[in-house]
Amino acid sequence: MKYLKTGICLLALLVLVALPLFSSPQAEEKKEIVIGAARSLSGPLAIVEKAAFAPIFKMWVDEVNAEGGIFIKQYNRKLPIRTLIYDDKSDVGTMARLIEKLIVEDKVDFVFPPTSTAQLFAAAPICNKYGYILMGAEGGATKIKEIITGLPYFFSTLNFSDHYQVPVLVDLMGKLGVKSAAIVFIADLHGVEYSGVAVPALALAGIDVIMTKSIPPGIKDMSPILKEAKAANVDAFLCFAYPDENILATKQSMELGFNPKIFLTGPGANFGFFPTIFGPATNGIMSWGAWNAKSSPGHKVLAEKLTKLYGPPAIDWWGHNLYYGGLQFWKQAVEKAGTLDQAKIRQIMATEKFETILGPTWFDSNHLLAVECHSGELGQWQNGIFEVIGPENKATAKPLYPKPAWPR
Image 1 (cartoon, rainbow, N blue to C red):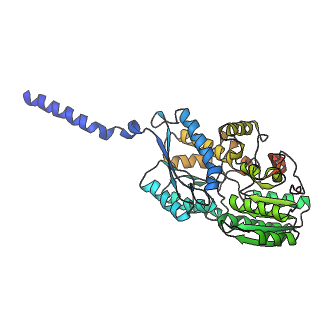
Image 2: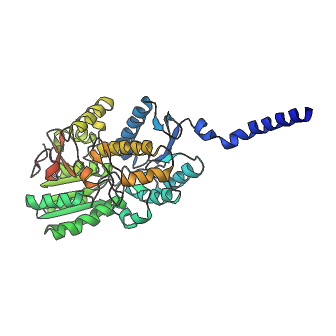
Image 3: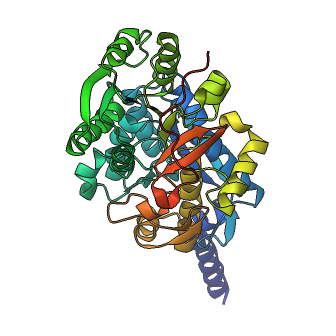
């Protein structure tokens, strides 16, 4: 009897020791969702980082955490979000190393996008290699489309060159009677993509591309190029560069009296800080986008929210609504999956529709935010409002053409 009691005690002890092996400690211990990113907090792209995705991401995280987090059925609780952001110093190589560090060493739950087209192109294969979803923000995917079938974990939220911006611009230019254009593009993937799409599209539409000039990032003087465009008397000037270069092009065009009928910069004039720099001279300048408070009741709410939180100069009239809609979509996909498993969430993102600020929202077969979800492709400053001027079915105003003269 003595030995029987001892055996029972030992058996009970073994069961207690073994219980953790058969229970789910992760479900009990998971306290948060960690989202990592390598972002351009410094360097030439810092102005894009600060004005584009960062304000929306911060606002969205604060909103989600104020509600207790994201409900994950696997853990039967809401998990708050913690962010881990590294500075890639606007360097693609540094960004790539930091993305891998986030996944391999830090073991973050999710990776959010880097800044710019070139960085997105470099990050997508890395995330795909490790089976991590990468939903883009700033950055196009014209080049990524060539390899998209091998990147099932990549999703793009922003509209870009051939999806569907340049086609809308070229169509509008044809209807307005534009005969000639000068193109300036920054010597990185963004500029290469846009000029590569625009030049043949304009030629096909019968619009003469008088000049095409490449500029280095951080150029300090564009006056020789602008003088050449002015001497050619082009109808349209299209600058496919980043804000610093586009601010310079606008400033020096005013100084030189170069005032073509269409003046487009992007990204640049799509940001709310552009009118704070150029005041009334902003009137008539075009850029990519586009959305405003008139686009829908939901967009009105978002514009009011961003204005209250950051002020009008901080609003990106190209991407803020798309980034916010993308984050709303992602959160619903995670909640529907009921798990943090990347493969299961990816499958839902690739096949489901969710209601967001954009209305019914989904990704097409290339994992690009469907064209139907775009609020606009082309915008223009008119009396202090960044109006949607293309396509016609999304327009909030008719195009102002020709662009008014620069104020004296």
